[in-house]
Length: 75
Image (cartoon, rainbow, N blue to C red):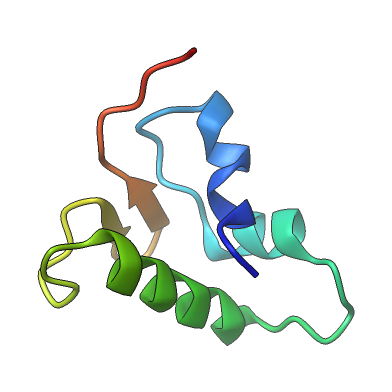
């Protein structure tokens, strides 16, 4: 699945994205479920983070969603 979940957030830097928002943004198939977003975030953390158990790039905002916390530049 890559990282399409982060694309919608590129317009709104430093704001947490809810699981529902990410689910709607990445819904390519009807069989995508709420917990599949968690799996994709876990996979991204494994690729992007130095220590996926202590994430700094993709942070969890408990009860809100996920925050892409790395500095981002428009090009």
